[in-house]
Amino acid sequence: MNIKKNIALSDTGFIFNPSTGESFSVNPIGVEIIKLIRDGKEKDQIKESILEKYQTDDATFERDYYDFVNIMNHYNLTEIDE
Amino acid sequence: MEKLRYERPIIKKLETGMPNKFGMRTEYTPMTHIDGVAVKELIKEYGSPLFVLSEKTMRNTLKSAKQAFTTRYPKVQFAWSYKTNYLDAVCNVFHQEGSWAEVVSGFEYQKALDNHVPGNKIIFNGPDKSDSDLKRAISNDSYIHIDHLEELYSVISIAKELNKKPRVSIRVNMDTGIYPMWDRFGFNYENGQAWDAINKIMLSEHLELVGLHSHIGTFMLSANAYAVAAFKLADLTVNIQRKYDYHLKYLDLGGGFASKNTLKGSFLPGADISPTFNDFAEAITGSLINSEIDPHHLPVLILETGRALIDEAGFLLGSVVANKRLSTGKRATIIDVGVNIMFTSFWYEHKLTPAQEFTHYTEDTIVYGPLCMNIDVIRENVNLPLLNKGDQVVIHYVGAYNMTQWMQFITLRPKVVMIDLKGKSHIIRDNETNSSITSLEKIPEHLMKFEL
Ligand SMILES: Cc1ncc(COP(=O)(O)O)c(C=O)c1O
Image (cartoon, chains in turn red, cyan):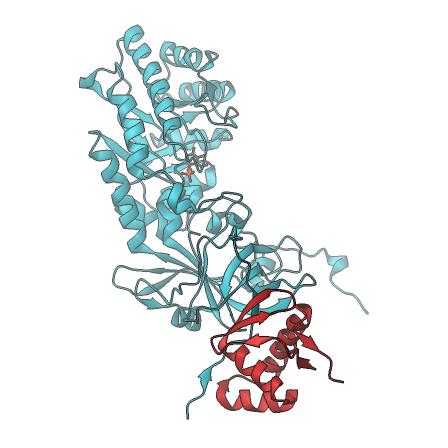
């Protein structure tokens, strides 16, 4: 899974989808995760870097991560890797 | 390096030009302390969920209500409506501030006596007073507010039996322009029932008519309805004055002033639209002062204000149990506060705020209680920050009716604490345990044993 190539993401958490004209806002940890996904990081690598930086645990993050990715799928912001 | 506070990642679609019905007021300003005491500490010490009452807010609210009336009318007496919250500590705060007791059952009457309220400062309302309730109240010189003719005749026969002259009043119901009209309690003004009952009492040598009572409804958002009620009670008072050359000692306008809560379906928050004590006082005292009641014999104005005096002093603290995503994509948060202990969630969109600091990111959330029941919804839609399991929330304006109408259902009822004027917390009602419930049960012999 990756974020669609044409999606624009600003550091302040503003997302624009030029093909639909829709825009979204993301919180800072969401921005970090999207950037890691864009860099081609896998879920476990993303988890590792989040757990290093924030006070949370494996299970909590994993649940929140899947929820976040699901919502991005729902908004058509992701694509399946070829 | 210290790790940063975690917040779950969220993404929200931005809708331009579409104001959100619920977005008018964001409720995520955290409430970390109540009267200087940390919410976290309260939960640590007493558990979650937890009811917390602020003695300071109770006293200050009563003082401001009193001030609104006493600056406009010379004789004012508040009577604490026991059913609103009859925890003894709560009643005693109001009694210390000078309030009498207003009760509507034998149980509440006994509570007032146990709190050492003198019998002649207890107002006994309600449609169901048993003969033994009436005997006790008459012997104690309490004020008996008669609801129907059967009660009037019972009072007369008990008066004869005890050879006492009870001090009575009648409850009057009337059209005040409010729908629905409460006509099930008392005697109707418009159709002459009230005047008829007044004459029966005035002509009976066994009763002393001391006042008139009305309670036109609850959570009234119109001050004008009270102007109408006071006008009609004043009219009856003047008629008694004319016909019998007799002066009533008091007019009791009941309770019903709206608190700062927001009624379900209301577009604007209650804190913005509820009339103030000054508005209600102006309406009531205006009607009395401008009436033809003899100014040398102005009756005492009694008020049985309930919810408006205590709603704001009550908080319900709870903790997040879990977060979920519903099939529609909507966020759901489960907290440990259910409708069983928060009866008023059926009437109000209770204000709910987090008890710790968050970033400004929020989500529209439905808040569920912990019961395995579909009705257990605390808020249908509230804009909340990204709460994690274990985070704490504060539900506001829960002082009225919850600590009396709560149900022992599925879970046990929690502790209630009061924070005193010095910021010290006291348990005023302990939490229930299994045995507080089962001690009332009995198992027939043949059901004592089973094998599985
Ligand atoms: C007779 C009477 N007085 C006073 C009250 C207190 O009303 P509120 O809490 O609306 O002020 C009630 C409540 O229903 C009542 O029935």
